[in-house]
Structures are given as structure tokens and as C-alpha cells.
Image 1 (cartoon, rainbow, N blue to C red):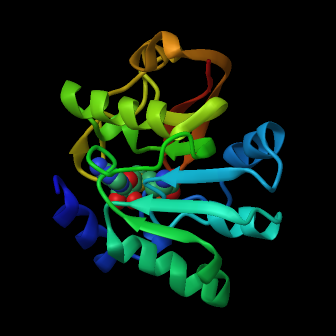
Image 2: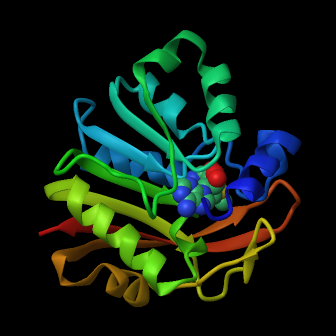
Length: 203
Ligand SMILES: C[S@@+](CC[C@H](N)C(=O)[O-])C[C@H]1O[C@@H](n2cnc3c(N)ncnc32)[C@H](O)[C@@H]1O
């Protein structure tokens, strides 16, 4: 698994609120998920890390949640935090570029700050193929990456930065762009990171 060791170390060595991508609440993601789905929707959060998005979705009554990350340590942080509630979630330790996901399974695919690590064209193609395969027709991809003026690296790793057009182009004609947003993420270290968010719908 590419980068697995890096990510295991990050989550073994740092507290969840000591990483640049930490959000006490994933507000924009939550707002959009509430707008695009109902609590009986089937959702996957790809590269979830130790994000609290899952806690907030459970609190809203979402029950069909899949949480995927390359790092087992990351998912363990979330499982410990959630306690008994964790048993209702489908946890997957896997690399998103090689995992086998069920076909036409999800109403919404959420990715914050994961796709931008895929600097190799073949990895991006593998990711796009998995989105296409596992989203239902008419379902949504909610994806956020560093904007063109965002940092060149995240967690010490190089990233690809996007504008809304270049990010949408990665997913091709099978997806229609529905919404786009910009966000300045305040890191725990007092700096800001420019993100873009896209909502794409599978045709
Ligand atoms: C910058 S963090 C973002 C975490 C979370 N989405 C959030 O917003 O708090 C990137 C996450 O992607 C995961 N990741 C990186 N490469 C991955 C891959 N190829 N497959 C699955 N997860 C991956 C990392 O372990 C890490 O948790």
C-alpha cells in the first residue's frame, strides 16, 4: 500500500487536533450532505482519517455509513471516540486506488483532502473508476481539494492543486458539476489553507 506507513505514523504520533486538516466540525460538508441526501442515504467517507464528520452524521440519524482510510490507526481513533455507536458503521482499512467497492451502492461519496494526494495519473484514474462503479446513478460526489493558491504540500507530501474546472475534468463527462465553493480552512497552527469544494452528480 503506497503511503500506508506514512499515514499510520501520522495517526500514531499526533493527536487528532494536531494536524493541519483538523476541523472541530466539517461544517460545509455537513451542510451539503444535509442538502443533498436524507438520513436513509448510503454514504461513504473516503480517507476519513479521524474526522468528526461521522459523529455528526450519526447524530443526524444517518445509519448507512461506510468510513474508509488507508490508516488503521486513524479509524481506531474514530472508533474509540464513538464507543458503542461505532458498531453501526462499516469500517474499511484500504487504499482507495485498489479497494474493491460494491457496485451502485452509495448515494453520496465524500472526500475532503484525499484525492489531491494522487499525483500519478494512473492512481487518479483508479480513483475515478471506483467512484463511477460504486455510486448509484444520480448520486453525488462531494469532493474538496487544495485550491490553486493552496499549499503545495499536505502532511509533508506533494499534492495536486485544482480549480473547479480542472477538478471536474478529472471525473469526465459521466459527472455533471452542480455546485462549487471556496473555503479558507483555519489550521490549528493559525494559518489558512485555500480549498475548493465541488458537488458532482453521476449522470
Ligand atoms: C489530509 S487527511 C484528511 C482526513 C479527513 N478527510 C478530514 O478531512 O479530516 C488525508 C487522509 O487520507 C488518507 N489517505 C491518504 N491516501 C489514501 C489512500 N490512497 N487511500 C485511502 N486513504 C488515504 C489518510 O490516511 C488521511 O486520513
